[in-house]
Length: 278
Image (cartoon, rainbow, N blue to C red; front, side, top):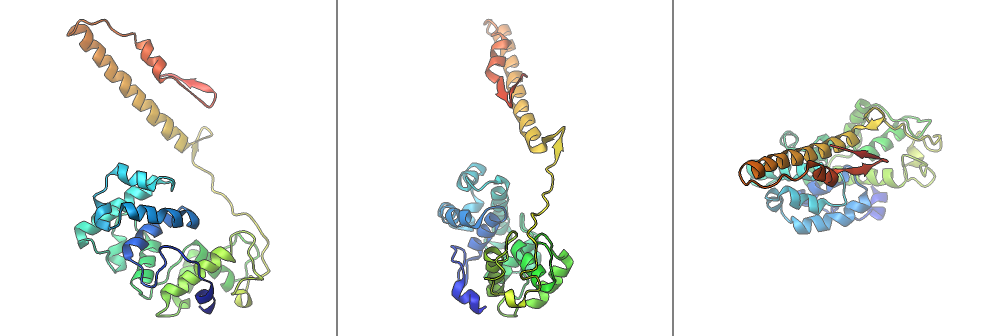
């Protein structure tokens, strides 16, 4: 705690008593985006949507444009839908109980716990990837950097270890240690403020984490298939509508039919070295 008071990192969402709406937005952004990028993007997003009421009224295109550059646009739409639920059910006030938070769209256990600890100063354990890594290494001797304790053991430890009344500061301090010293690869054990009490300090062999294989079909990632099929569907519907227009031109207006091959030329495109035809 003393170390954190002197060395804490400064971010737009870190305040003594942060605004729940700002914390909600920042936590959703941080789920799959680097901290430095979120620090740049959060003020711009809040400039566009300064209140939860304004976000709740946003259209899909407005939200996605404001989210541009963050990736995983579905997060932005779920955040907007969450804001709508809060406005409808709680008159725009973010609820302060875990049960109510977990009922909201897009809010999981971590985000709910973070809101309760950071904004409402409740004695709640918060566990993210950094905290899980730190707890694993200080509680048990890890021989490689990829080793972690089971989730159940981490959750039990997390409930016992943090000082009551200091949940917010404690968990943010552990997060900073995890991101600055107790990193997933090449941890800085000699510089870590927890080195004297860590069972794994200086004992771990650096091993890259095992990457999960991406779901694929015939060797091609499913996300690529989804994109190609969506594109083909759109082009099919355009051609279908064009054929109906041809019939109208022929039967009602007695205009000459445009060769369908001309439309094919418009929608042929090259992709990965081959040409797709509809």
